[in-house]
Image (cartoon, rainbow, N blue to C red; front, side, top):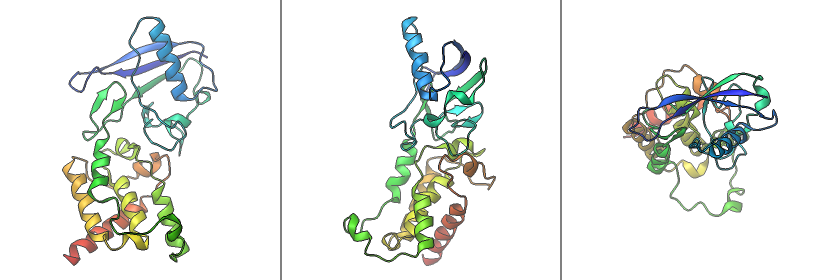
Length: 247
């Protein structure tokens, strides 16, 4: 199949950036989207041109580094699918595919399709952990946890921190990411001693880093490759309110 790629090229964070068109022939429908970009780069290198810079790591839908804005949607048009899990059979022969980096002030473009997502790491460093000695992994199995709490905590913990929620939100809010990280610890006994400090610290860091506010449009949940529910945002709000009432 032959496709036409409209790709964002930007040499550096200070460069203005622009879209460039790349016709690409010989694309297999069984290629993943990232394999197709690998193929594009091999073609560009053979032609003596600079390859397109993009990120990837596990290519198994686990790490979250592959996030791209494809045809106006984070990770493309399939629900609960990361960019690396998107295959070229989802596109038509001769189709023009627009590929962009995440668009958010807190995720500045580094080069081409790569953005700096260290803001998420800073939020995690502010409180997304426990400092008490909770024992080794087998010790956790000795602590009784209600099934409903376990299921909700596990769902929240599946967040891979890709940033699709931020890219999808009209306000570039990180509320779904923060809510998932706060929720999975708030629902477990090990996370309760530091729950108040965690909620306040992570929300404060989120605001400090320039993420927008949540207006409950639900785009974050719709585009999340792991299907994290916005019910976690309600839980974050409750945790934050309780923390401020305690103070």
